[in-house]
Image (cartoon, rainbow, N blue to C red):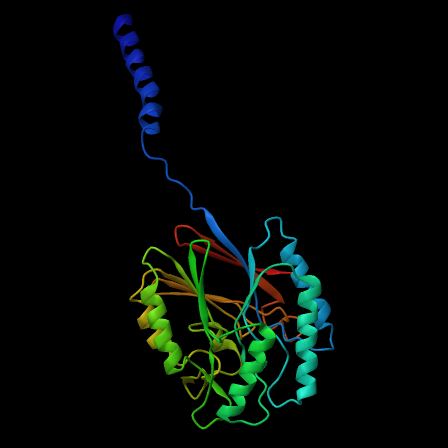
Length: 307
């Protein structure tokens, strides 16, 4: 090859190398999603006046509020107190009093709450007694309604009430009653399609960990009780399928952690602040809470953290 030909080839190569970054810079630069809202999901506190429950909740609240990038709000996922069902009124009053005392002394963040089964005082197993217990729980949680929705930082948050009396009044199964289901349909329809939606319930709508809570397989059959997971899960999943902006569902109740991605929705079941009811870890899940980040593009990140 002649010297002149070689120099021409080198010059052409340099020109191409120089042009490539200029062409690349002309392409649109992908922008990362911006976080719209950070939530601390604290569920299954099971407050009681023994076993260090009050100190444990205070420690959890301080941990969440002292994160380098602290949450915008707390969602209390239900079962705030240890046990109201079948207990004397005085015992339940002490549990609620202690729960609210800790919140007053150790929390400065806004709180959204949903009702859990352990929150409902029920002296006798009748639908009327359960309704009375629900009203008392709502008073302590400062709720005007047991289910509600609100817009927050570009997201639509829906808080559901999982705990419904059985037809014969015998305690409960997890589902939405007819009035609540109709309300949910209307609320979803009224939410703009461009607004991402997060749904919160105490009992999981859909979960995998329910198959490992107790002896769930026997006689060649898997069995999940109607108190472990929503019995109307199919109806809810079908409803959510009509609204692609339903992005995620949060729950607790099982004291175990899992994530199920189904039909475009991520279902996060988070572990308990109380762990195994204030006696260490429950199976593989330690006492903790979830840091839930909601982004402007509708994506969700759920990180379960120990405190």
